[in-house]
Amino acid sequence: MSLNKINFSKDHKLIKDIIIESGKIAIKWFNNKPKVWKKEDGTKVSEADIEVNDFLHKELKNKLPETGWLSEETKDNYLRLNFKKTLIVDPIDGTKSFLNGKKDFSISVALTESGKPISAFIYNPANKELYEAEKNKGSWLNSKKITTTNTKVLENCKMCAFKPMFSHPVWRRSWPKMQIMNKNSIAYRMALVSSGIFDTMMALNKKSDWDVAAGDLLITEAGGKVTDHKGNQLIYNLKDTSKKSIIGSCIGLHGIIIKRVKELDL
Image (cartoon, rainbow, N blue to C red; front, side, top):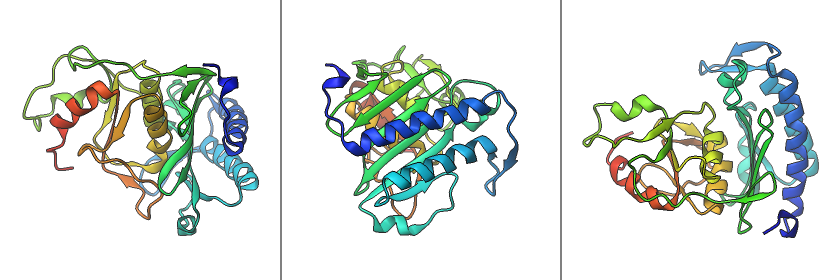
């Protein structure tokens, strides 16, 4: 199926044009030593994050004024809860990699309705990879339709996660040998699962809506499944935007992984 034959919504097309422009700002700062400081939670933020965020906020809210706004780099305003639709944004997911000149960062934008993503983009401008999905219209990478893998066994599967996690003494059963690789950007990990580069991804530490909302729709529309470690579907744009865990996987592995991790007390 050709991307040109998909009747994407007007909102989806608007967001796509704007996120592509925001990538030019990110690339301007990539390997160009932007100023960096620490936020209240101790994580690093740069002037690149802020400039991309400000651009997205200005342009998206101008074109889509009847939407709420939730971003990692904007002080939360609970007025977003009054809107039927809300934009959930991470201007640079994977800031650590971005600042170290590594290409595994991304710009993540999701449009949610009643707590569920209906339009999603994860853009890696350094690799020129634009992932997009709209509800009931599939997932796409650079205009080519993508799907998750059909892997059904953990052994030798391609897992995108923090490798030391699997040797932690908390596990009741040891994990089989897997091909494990990590990416600093959670959103980018999820995008790579949606396109079949990895079979599955997992994060068992707290994340936020802006880390996972876009990736949720990308994996789901590509044929996979996204839940927390208990197997619960994720709801976005609540007052509490934190997520205890995230499992994003091809269908064949999702249930197998949940059986191993659901008993953890996170």
